[in-house]
Image 1 (cartoon, rainbow over the protein chains, first blue to last red):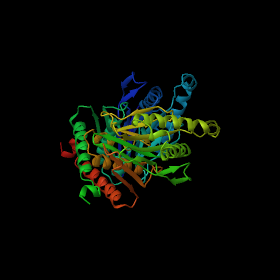
Image 2: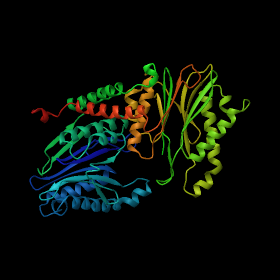
Image 3: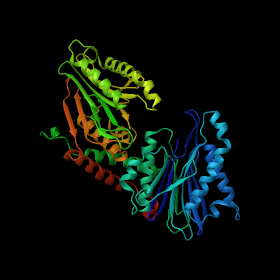
Image 4: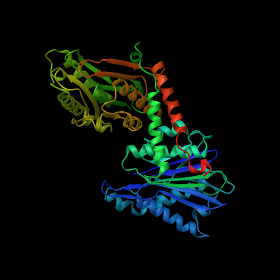
Length: 245
Length: 245
């Protein structure tokens, strides 16, 4: 499976993803699900992908081919992140249709979902979730994060921490905690973890990390979070009967 | 929807459940999902239910009718909690079949799942999850808790806290935190919360609470947990770039 999360705060955007893919339990591979499209100072997009790996690779390959051509269509031409999400959605839907009949006969879904966020010179920074059907929704101050893949285990901490005025560093840390909770609960989500931060107005990726399972930062966050949760648990109020009431 | 959790530790059993049921978003009701069958000093069973409300009510009503008859079959006669789970499973499957065709024509599922735990004089205390198909699995030292309904949001804290040597009071507190995380994430899970504790060997329910949304204990746990998580988050290690590295 997969877990990816994008966060939009006033200060910019945060993207985080795991790297495990599986087709059944005996066909497990490692693929980064984070893809950066960057013309520094002009435009930046980060795309996260979940679902059918062949579909998502075909979509990313097409976007990359177009982006490398200065006259190409696609992410190099769109005027803002919403146009980018719309373009990605149409491309993804078209690619899914190519193999949909053959896949359906094998009982396999061609569907893929994406998170795309970024900024174009003159636009605002925006974050969108593109459905398999090609339509999209965007993050807002009331709903400042979007998730794809195995979303439930990592949602509670996002709900408690993320708000429009959260700093980019705190949002990035929260994304890593959200990923860690998911990795602990679902064996089909796993490291290395990819993290990217785009400061609003910078028009480039301003921080980028790939954290292996044994990296000191990831291990520090895992251990610190585990100990912090246990302390929080021990501090909870007692039942009346524990107080001798 | 529903969220119910049962926990088996060396010291006994803990049961917790929410009380919200829904059929669509505009037909929301409150029903306790916790049902106690008790002959103090002889035997005790606690049953938690999720799924089709008509099925689970029919099952509980049949169990109750039998249990009230000193010569009746069912939970009054079984020799241990595993026999109780098997009996409940067969009863549930039979009841589902009665209306399965009519429900299928309306596109509705008759399925219900149950957690049943307890103890019979001379047996050990045990906890089982009864599937809609009538078969069951039981909790073990490696897997000391079982969940039904909306299980994912409340799982991470159980994984971190619950072990065979956890005290009954800590297990009960953890069950309430697990319920609270689920209630925050899914509007179809809601208070009041039912909590029951059966100390091993007591052969009765030793602690029983129903917590409304405005009860001081529930509010104290909600607030304490929220603040504790935020403290744990603030204590996490910083990125290199935050340290001026």
